[in-house]
Image 1 (tube, rainbow, N blue to C red):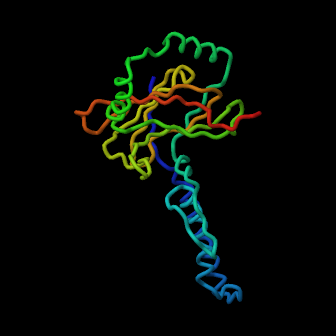
Image 2 (cartoon, rainbow, N blue to C red):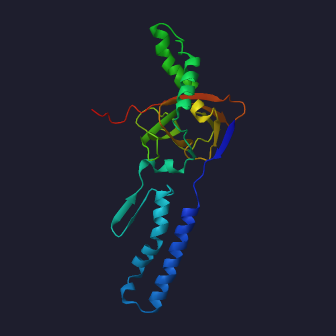
Image 3 (cartoon, rainbow, N blue to C red):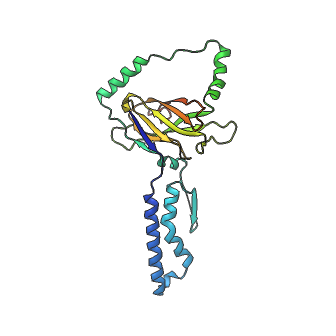
Length: 240
């Protein structure tokens, strides 16, 4: 079973903001014709009128920040995640827990594929080359959804050596990412087309799991790339 998603940002907040700003401009213009004494500073009132548009542009990650009346607004680094599609999480029922455990036991432990120090140390560079420095990563925060433990964002990056930031957007060579989250999601395969922004998904979970992605390239001669990410919660504060 497969589900296909096109990653895009909702347009209605920006449209609503434009309508509010236009309404404010009309109101302020009418008040100006009525000689309202507190509208003498036209530039400032124009800034107030376009404030709804600026707020939506920042919140929607269209722009990074703006400054008005001596106050500067910036979006959080993770604000871009809000534009990713959301997968409804499974309910943590007794049956789903037993099915997930049984499925994991059937797979068995991952065998060691290399022996000896020279081989396994070389495997690190081999993995960089195999994955073309592409990696599946995740971040999370306490969930606001009932029965869920964490809200999670899973997305693709490219490792950039040195002090430069890793690449998170602009993967021109990638066509599609397919994501498989295992039995708790009904063994479904979710598809996410590349639109030039973040390639990933948001979801919620009540336990840890392994995510597997298949990356397809625009060049049909390039074989798809398989990536794995264990979605853990080890960086959460520990209660003592």
